[in-house]
Image (cartoon, rainbow, N blue to C red; front, side, top):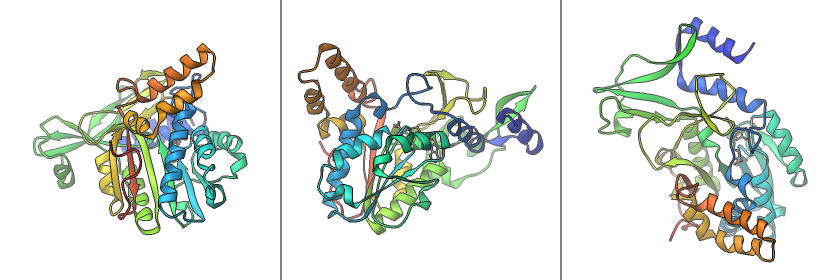
Length: 349
Ligand code: SAH
Protein backbone atom coordinates (compact mmCIF):
# COMPACT_ATOMS: atom_id res chain seq x y z
CA UNK A 1 0.00 0.00 0.00
CA UNK A 2 1.27 3.51 -0.72
CA UNK A 3 1.91 5.61 2.37
CA UNK A 4 -0.70 8.09 1.12
CA UNK A 5 -3.34 5.35 1.04
CA UNK A 6 -2.21 3.95 4.40
CA UNK A 7 -2.49 7.37 6.09
CA UNK A 8 -5.93 7.98 4.56
CA UNK A 9 -7.05 4.63 5.89
CA UNK A 10 -5.69 5.37 9.36
CA UNK A 11 -7.39 8.77 9.52
CA UNK A 12 -10.69 7.48 8.12
CA UNK A 13 -10.69 4.68 10.70
CA UNK A 14 -9.29 6.44 13.76
CA UNK A 15 -9.83 10.16 13.19
CA UNK A 16 -7.15 12.86 12.82
CA UNK A 17 -3.59 11.73 13.67
CA UNK A 18 -1.30 13.54 16.05
CA UNK A 19 1.41 15.45 14.19
CA UNK A 20 4.21 13.32 15.69
CA UNK A 21 2.51 10.11 14.52
CA UNK A 22 2.10 11.60 11.04
CA UNK A 23 5.74 12.67 10.96
CA UNK A 24 7.00 9.31 12.23
CA UNK A 25 5.15 7.52 9.43
CA UNK A 26 6.39 9.96 6.77
CA UNK A 27 9.99 10.04 8.01
CA UNK A 28 10.47 6.32 8.22
CA UNK A 29 9.22 5.95 4.66
CA UNK A 30 11.31 8.89 3.52
CA UNK A 31 14.63 7.76 5.01
CA UNK A 32 14.02 4.06 4.47
CA UNK A 33 14.13 4.18 0.73
CA UNK A 34 16.70 6.65 -0.45
CA UNK A 35 19.86 8.60 0.08
CA UNK A 36 18.40 12.10 0.49
CA UNK A 37 21.73 13.93 0.74
CA UNK A 38 23.76 15.95 -1.71
CA UNK A 39 23.17 17.82 -4.94
CA UNK A 40 20.93 15.13 -6.45
CA UNK A 41 18.89 14.74 -3.26
CA UNK A 42 16.77 17.02 -1.11
CA UNK A 43 19.25 18.66 1.25
CA UNK A 44 22.96 19.04 2.04
CA UNK A 45 24.67 18.84 5.42
CA UNK A 46 27.87 20.26 6.89
CA UNK A 47 29.99 17.08 6.46
CA UNK A 48 28.91 16.92 2.81
CA UNK A 49 30.02 20.52 2.32
CA UNK A 50 33.58 20.03 3.53
CA UNK A 51 35.91 17.55 5.22
CA UNK A 52 36.89 20.38 7.58
CA UNK A 53 33.69 19.93 9.58
CA UNK A 54 34.41 16.31 10.51
CA UNK A 55 38.08 17.03 11.05
CA UNK A 56 37.27 19.62 13.71
CA UNK A 57 34.92 17.15 15.43
CA UNK A 58 37.58 14.43 15.22
CA UNK A 59 40.00 16.69 17.07
CA UNK A 60 37.32 17.54 19.60
CA UNK A 61 36.49 13.88 20.29
CA UNK A 62 40.16 12.96 20.62
CA UNK A 63 40.55 15.79 23.14
CA UNK A 64 37.60 14.81 25.33
CA UNK A 65 38.57 11.12 25.22
CA UNK A 66 42.08 12.06 26.37
CA UNK A 67 40.69 14.39 29.07
CA UNK A 68 38.45 11.53 30.28
CA UNK A 69 41.59 9.46 30.93
CA UNK A 70 41.56 7.46 27.67
CA UNK A 71 38.90 4.92 28.67
CA UNK A 72 39.46 1.65 26.81
CA UNK A 73 37.53 0.10 25.31
CA UNK A 74 34.88 2.72 24.58
CA UNK A 75 31.86 3.01 22.31
CA UNK A 76 32.24 5.57 19.55
CA UNK A 77 28.74 6.10 18.20
CA UNK A 78 27.08 8.29 15.63
CA UNK A 79 23.35 8.89 15.54
CA UNK A 80 21.97 9.19 11.99
CA UNK A 81 25.31 8.90 10.15
CA UNK A 82 23.91 9.66 6.67
CA UNK A 83 26.51 8.70 4.08
CA UNK A 84 29.20 7.97 6.67
CA UNK A 85 31.18 11.01 5.55
CA UNK A 86 31.29 12.67 8.96
CA UNK A 87 32.52 9.56 10.77
CA UNK A 88 35.17 8.92 8.10
CA UNK A 89 36.50 12.47 8.54
CA UNK A 90 36.34 12.18 12.34
CA UNK A 91 38.29 8.91 12.36
CA UNK A 92 40.97 10.18 9.98
CA UNK A 93 41.86 12.82 12.58
CA UNK A 94 41.03 11.13 15.90
CA UNK A 95 42.95 7.95 15.12
CA UNK A 96 46.16 9.96 14.98
CA UNK A 97 45.97 10.04 18.76
CA UNK A 98 47.83 6.93 19.95
CA UNK A 99 45.47 4.36 21.48
CA UNK A 100 42.25 5.88 20.09
CA UNK A 101 41.78 3.45 17.20
CA UNK A 102 42.58 0.41 19.35
CA UNK A 103 40.10 1.45 22.05
CA UNK A 104 37.21 2.57 19.84
CA UNK A 105 34.28 0.26 19.05
CA UNK A 106 32.36 1.93 16.25
CA UNK A 107 28.57 1.85 16.41
CA UNK A 108 26.19 3.49 13.96
CA UNK A 109 22.62 4.17 15.04
CA UNK A 110 20.67 4.15 11.80
CA UNK A 111 17.23 2.95 10.76
CA UNK A 112 17.50 3.39 7.00
CA UNK A 113 18.57 0.25 5.08
CA UNK A 114 19.61 2.42 2.12
CA UNK A 115 21.93 4.55 4.26
CA UNK A 116 23.27 1.57 6.25
CA UNK A 117 24.46 0.10 2.96
CA UNK A 118 26.22 3.32 2.09
CA UNK A 119 27.83 3.57 5.55
CA UNK A 120 29.02 -0.05 5.26
CA UNK A 121 30.99 0.88 2.14
CA UNK A 122 32.48 4.11 3.40
CA UNK A 123 33.41 2.86 6.88
CA UNK A 124 34.32 -0.78 6.11
CA UNK A 125 37.91 -0.34 7.31
CA UNK A 126 36.66 0.58 10.79
CA UNK A 127 34.40 -2.48 11.09
CA UNK A 128 31.24 -0.75 12.34
CA UNK A 129 28.26 -2.37 14.03
CA UNK A 130 24.73 -1.04 13.62
CA UNK A 131 21.92 -0.42 16.07
CA UNK A 132 18.38 0.75 15.42
CA UNK A 133 18.15 2.69 18.67
CA UNK A 134 20.40 4.28 21.24
CA UNK A 135 19.14 1.77 23.85
CA UNK A 136 20.58 -1.08 21.80
CA UNK A 137 24.19 0.09 22.15
CA UNK A 138 26.42 -2.06 24.36
CA UNK A 139 27.53 -0.85 27.79
CA UNK A 140 30.67 1.15 28.41
CA UNK A 141 31.93 4.71 28.15
CA UNK A 142 30.02 6.34 25.32
CA UNK A 143 31.32 9.05 22.98
CA UNK A 144 28.59 10.18 20.62
CA UNK A 145 28.24 12.57 17.75
CA UNK A 146 24.99 13.56 16.05
CA UNK A 147 24.72 16.08 13.23
CA UNK A 148 21.30 16.95 11.83
CA UNK A 149 19.81 13.92 13.54
CA UNK A 150 17.53 15.49 16.16
CA UNK A 151 15.82 17.79 13.65
CA UNK A 152 14.67 14.67 11.79
CA UNK A 153 12.68 13.33 14.75
CA UNK A 154 8.91 13.82 15.11
CA UNK A 155 7.50 16.77 17.02
CA UNK A 156 4.21 17.66 18.66
CA UNK A 157 2.69 21.11 18.22
CA UNK A 158 0.29 22.87 20.54
CA UNK A 159 -1.53 26.17 20.34
CA UNK A 160 -2.33 28.31 23.33
CA UNK A 161 -6.09 28.71 23.63
CA UNK A 162 -6.66 31.18 26.46
CA UNK A 163 -5.46 29.21 29.53
CA UNK A 164 -5.65 25.84 27.73
CA UNK A 165 -3.76 24.15 24.86
CA UNK A 166 -4.95 22.36 21.73
CA UNK A 167 -2.81 19.89 19.87
CA UNK A 168 -2.22 19.89 16.14
CA UNK A 169 -3.38 16.84 14.20
CA UNK A 170 -3.55 15.88 10.56
CA UNK A 171 -7.04 15.16 9.24
CA UNK A 172 -8.81 14.79 5.91
CA UNK A 173 -11.11 17.32 4.34
CA UNK A 174 -12.60 16.89 0.86
CA UNK A 175 -10.14 14.05 0.37
CA UNK A 176 -7.09 16.21 1.07
CA UNK A 177 -4.82 16.09 4.13
CA UNK A 178 -5.16 19.18 6.31
CA UNK A 179 -4.09 20.39 9.74
CA UNK A 180 -6.76 20.35 12.43
CA UNK A 181 -6.63 21.39 16.07
CA UNK A 182 -7.77 19.00 18.78
CA UNK A 183 -9.95 19.87 21.76
CA UNK A 184 -8.54 22.43 24.21
CA UNK A 185 -7.14 20.89 27.38
CA UNK A 186 -5.22 21.97 30.45
CA UNK A 187 -1.51 21.02 30.40
CA UNK A 188 0.59 22.05 33.39
CA UNK A 189 3.77 20.79 31.71
CA UNK A 190 3.31 23.16 28.77
CA UNK A 191 2.29 26.02 31.11
CA UNK A 192 5.60 25.58 32.95
CA UNK A 193 7.68 25.28 29.83
CA UNK A 194 6.20 28.18 27.91
CA UNK A 195 5.18 30.68 30.59
CA UNK A 196 3.38 33.75 29.34
CA UNK A 197 2.64 32.32 25.86
CA UNK A 198 0.02 34.61 24.36
CA UNK A 199 -3.29 33.30 23.04
CA UNK A 200 -2.74 31.74 19.60
CA UNK A 201 0.98 31.06 20.12
CA UNK A 202 2.24 27.76 18.68
CA UNK A 203 4.79 25.77 20.69
CA UNK A 204 6.63 22.55 19.90
CA UNK A 205 7.96 19.60 21.87
CA UNK A 206 9.89 16.59 20.66
CA UNK A 207 9.34 13.66 23.02
CA UNK A 208 11.61 11.46 20.88
CA UNK A 209 14.50 13.95 20.85
CA UNK A 210 14.10 14.49 24.58
CA UNK A 211 14.18 10.78 25.27
CA UNK A 212 17.37 10.49 23.18
CA UNK A 213 18.90 13.30 25.27
CA UNK A 214 17.71 11.63 28.49
CA UNK A 215 19.26 8.32 27.40
CA UNK A 216 22.56 9.98 26.51
CA UNK A 217 22.63 12.01 29.71
CA UNK A 218 21.96 9.00 31.94
CA UNK A 219 24.66 6.90 30.27
CA UNK A 220 27.28 9.63 30.21
CA UNK A 221 26.65 10.64 33.81
CA UNK A 222 26.95 7.08 35.09
CA UNK A 223 29.40 5.41 32.68
CA UNK A 224 31.42 8.33 31.33
CA UNK A 225 31.82 9.70 27.84
CA UNK A 226 30.55 12.70 25.93
CA UNK A 227 27.94 13.69 23.38
CA UNK A 228 28.19 16.46 20.85
CA UNK A 229 24.90 17.42 19.24
CA UNK A 230 24.82 19.78 16.26
CA UNK A 231 21.60 20.93 14.70
CA UNK A 232 19.61 23.91 13.66
CA UNK A 233 17.37 25.47 16.18
CA UNK A 234 17.68 27.70 19.21
CA UNK A 235 18.19 27.56 22.97
CA UNK A 236 14.47 28.12 23.38
CA UNK A 237 11.56 29.67 21.57
CA UNK A 238 8.04 29.39 20.28
CA UNK A 239 6.46 29.28 16.83
CA UNK A 240 5.79 26.77 14.09
CA UNK A 241 9.11 25.51 12.64
CA UNK A 242 7.84 22.43 10.80
CA UNK A 243 9.40 22.44 7.37
CA UNK A 244 9.41 20.17 4.34
CA UNK A 245 12.26 20.18 1.83
CA UNK A 246 12.29 18.57 -1.57
CA UNK A 247 15.14 19.03 -4.04
CA UNK A 248 16.59 21.85 -1.92
CA UNK A 249 13.33 23.87 -2.00
CA UNK A 250 10.55 24.29 0.57
CA UNK A 251 7.58 21.98 0.00
CA UNK A 252 4.11 21.46 1.50
CA UNK A 253 4.58 19.18 4.55
CA UNK A 254 1.23 17.49 3.88
CA UNK A 255 1.70 16.85 0.16
CA UNK A 256 3.04 13.48 -1.05
CA UNK A 257 3.68 11.97 2.41
CA UNK A 258 7.01 10.19 2.71
CA UNK A 259 8.43 11.98 -0.29
CA UNK A 260 9.92 15.11 1.30
CA UNK A 261 12.30 15.62 4.20
CA UNK A 262 10.38 16.86 7.25
CA UNK A 263 12.28 18.76 9.93
CA UNK A 264 11.73 21.07 12.87
CA UNK A 265 14.01 23.31 14.87
CA UNK A 266 15.68 21.73 17.87
CA UNK A 267 14.99 23.21 21.32
CA UNK A 268 18.37 22.91 23.06
CA UNK A 269 17.09 23.99 26.44
CA UNK A 270 14.70 21.03 26.47
CA UNK A 271 17.54 18.68 25.51
CA UNK A 272 19.88 20.02 28.21
CA UNK A 273 17.10 19.66 30.81
CA UNK A 274 16.30 16.10 29.68
CA UNK A 275 19.99 15.12 29.82
CA UNK A 276 20.47 15.92 33.51
CA UNK A 277 22.33 14.73 35.60
CA UNK A 278 24.88 15.03 32.75
CA UNK A 279 26.31 18.55 32.52
CA UNK A 280 25.63 20.44 29.33
CA UNK A 281 27.78 23.10 27.68
CA UNK A 282 26.33 25.49 25.10
CA UNK A 283 24.49 26.00 23.03
CA UNK A 284 27.06 27.88 20.96
CA UNK A 285 26.81 28.83 17.31
CA UNK A 286 28.44 26.41 14.87
CA UNK A 287 30.54 29.24 13.43
CA UNK A 288 32.07 30.27 16.77
CA UNK A 289 32.56 26.62 17.73
CA UNK A 290 34.43 25.74 14.54
CA UNK A 291 36.52 28.92 14.70
CA UNK A 292 37.63 28.11 18.25
CA UNK A 293 38.63 24.62 17.14
CA UNK A 294 40.83 26.07 14.40
CA UNK A 295 38.85 25.72 11.18
CA UNK A 296 40.43 28.84 9.70
CA UNK A 297 43.96 27.48 10.15
CA UNK A 298 42.80 24.19 8.67
CA UNK A 299 41.31 25.97 5.64
CA UNK A 300 44.61 27.81 5.12
CA UNK A 301 46.58 24.58 5.33
CA UNK A 302 44.29 22.86 2.84
CA UNK A 303 44.53 25.81 0.45
CA UNK A 304 48.30 26.14 0.54
CA UNK A 305 49.83 25.48 -2.85
CA UNK A 306 46.50 24.55 -4.44
CA UNK A 307 45.21 26.00 -7.74
CA UNK A 308 42.95 29.04 -7.39
CA UNK A 309 39.75 27.14 -8.23
CA UNK A 310 40.37 24.84 -5.25
CA UNK A 311 41.29 27.75 -2.99
CA UNK A 312 37.97 29.36 -3.90
CA UNK A 313 36.07 26.17 -3.10
CA UNK A 314 37.78 25.87 0.29
CA UNK A 315 37.07 29.53 1.08
CA UNK A 316 33.43 29.10 0.06
CA UNK A 317 33.03 25.98 2.23
CA UNK A 318 34.64 27.74 5.21
CA UNK A 319 32.22 30.62 4.78
CA UNK A 320 29.21 28.37 4.42
CA UNK A 321 30.02 26.47 7.60
CA UNK A 322 30.90 29.47 9.76
CA UNK A 323 29.34 32.72 8.51
CA UNK A 324 26.46 33.95 10.70
CA UNK A 325 24.25 34.43 7.67
CA UNK A 326 24.93 30.90 6.46
CA UNK A 327 25.24 27.95 8.88
CA UNK A 328 27.29 29.74 11.53
CA UNK A 329 24.49 31.02 13.73
CA UNK A 330 21.33 29.01 13.03
CA UNK A 331 23.25 25.78 13.57
CA UNK A 332 23.99 25.29 17.25
CA UNK A 333 26.26 22.97 19.21
CA UNK A 334 25.42 21.41 22.57
CA UNK A 335 27.68 19.04 24.46
CA UNK A 336 26.92 16.64 27.30
CA UNK A 337 29.61 15.51 29.74
CA UNK A 338 29.83 13.86 33.17
CA UNK A 339 29.08 16.22 36.06
CA UNK A 340 32.72 16.71 37.04
CA UNK A 341 34.09 17.43 33.55
CA UNK A 342 35.86 20.66 32.67
CA UNK A 343 34.69 22.96 29.90
CA UNK A 344 35.63 21.27 26.62
CA UNK A 345 37.25 23.02 23.63
CA UNK A 346 34.95 25.25 21.61
CA UNK A 347 32.62 26.22 24.44
CA UNK A 348 34.51 29.19 25.87
CA UNK A 349 35.64 32.28 24.05
N1 SAH B 1 24.40 13.11 10.03
C1 SAH B 1 24.34 13.03 8.58
C2 SAH B 1 22.93 12.74 8.04
C3 SAH B 1 21.81 13.62 8.51
S1 SAH B 1 20.26 13.12 7.82
C4 SAH B 1 24.93 14.27 7.99
O1 SAH B 1 25.20 15.20 8.71
O2 SAH B 1 25.14 14.29 6.77
C5 SAH B 1 19.51 12.24 9.16
C6 SAH B 1 20.07 10.87 9.42
O3 SAH B 1 19.36 10.29 10.53
C7 SAH B 1 19.95 9.86 8.30
O4 SAH B 1 21.06 9.01 8.33
C8 SAH B 1 18.66 9.12 8.68
O5 SAH B 1 18.53 7.88 8.02
C9 SAH B 1 18.84 9.01 10.16
N2 SAH B 1 17.61 8.83 10.93
C10 SAH B 1 16.48 9.56 10.81
N3 SAH B 1 15.57 9.18 11.75
C11 SAH B 1 16.18 8.21 12.48
C12 SAH B 1 15.78 7.44 13.62
N4 SAH B 1 14.57 7.59 14.17
N5 SAH B 1 16.66 6.56 14.13
C13 SAH B 1 17.90 6.41 13.58
N6 SAH B 1 18.33 7.12 12.51
C14 SAH B 1 17.48 7.99 11.97
